[in-house]
Length: 478
Image (cartoon, rainbow, N blue to C red; front, side, top):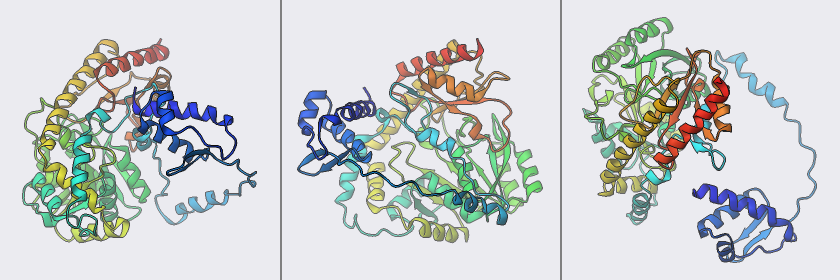
């Protein structure tokens, strides 16, 4: 049983038993709860914390857990309707209202109900995360001299050097900033490169989190179609001319969601087109460390071949480790680096030094290459299992591309299929999938779903998840 399911079940059980205790009454000890419910002490602690967050229980260190006092009758809620006017007033002064649809991001962060297979996750399952290596690295980091002091605002020198070596080319440690995860780095980049109301060119389809960042900053995402070889460079040039945009955001390696890799022929074209337009390319190299075992040599980052400061490079350790290991890098050359640094400092000061030191310890340990090698093997097996099950059970869902890296497959629904109905039917059948609509900044050409094979427990759960999807399709398509 997953730890999350155990915590939920225990919390539900304790919630039902609370009426046995008077307000202020003491609940059984943690040891008693462990023995009675046959769960771990960690599960007990997390279940009690959940009830405490709901205001049902009060925990006192060294004393135990107690039923909370009954709440006094609350006053009538205030009138917040004025906020609708205030928030919508943005549109009166800005060309692009800053309303944000975060549904595509929340779909990859929200935990599904117990028993639902998680095909919508954006992160590695706990069984694939290097938990022991991260714990050991964090313990060693805490003992490093100065580990709990203020770090340099650009980041710890050893970590900047490690990221610079990974990017390659002429990038040096002095041109790298340490950021708190890829989402934060992308936010800093877009705020630095484009003023509110400006157009920003994006791949279509693309990562919903980036679209949310752009819209929150008051930018106007303009889609440029992607095919099997990456972004269409002929259409990219046309989009620059038509819009006057000065920023293009792309994922050249195992693009999310299509899995496409920018071809060798198009790589120099992207740089040339952007340079002629006087524009920046934000390269989101988010998944380079989740390559599959059979991938072969990878193309270098675009930043490696950039000599004129066109590329602002973003890469992260989060996808290959844990959602909570939020350490990433921003790399840029020229005056733009000062602007990136200034915006990042104003927004977040710096990434906590213990986490940076832990990253240095982790990537320098013998456990790191072993972890990457093990994940590469497991992701290949999971990808092949999912692709084979889809061909067998769901041949009506088109699977145009099977990537050699990343953690998901991108499926096109039959013509005329209702995407929202498909997502709802899948959830009723016991499987959570990601809707394709949030990946498009304009009207999508067809319905799609994205299936992640990294967030599930293993190949048996993948097979069972596809079987449940078959049930959902039978409900929809007859």
